[in-house]
Image 1 (cartoon, rainbow, N blue to C red):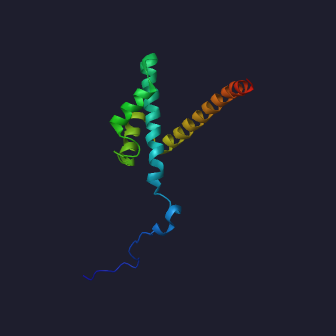
Image 2 (image 1 turned 90 degrees about the vertical axis):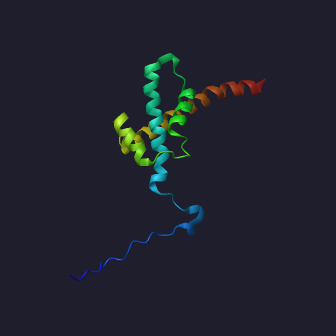
Image 3 (image 1 turned 60 degrees about the vertical axis):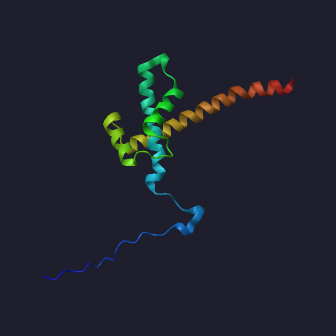
Length: 128
């Protein structure tokens, strides 16, 4: 029995190191932080509903970092985080990306409200 040679050449990854600062990270690296922060946000909201007045976001973030590691550490793979989100939260990658966008919008709106409230105070203080 003769073996057939494949007519397709072997896969060779493109070396993008020549791009330097303009190189693009792998998709999984770019989406990792979105998944991590979305899981943290969703778990925090669940804990907040459960604990009510006793809940403290800073304590929660610290405990989350103890359990999941910091986002820079990448203690768990993207696949592991997605599996966790699916089993525990019923969320897919698309759901988590949408959650991340909603969270960014909320933070931006909050920052704008804070800046709007601080502006009159700053101008009053500068008049004195």
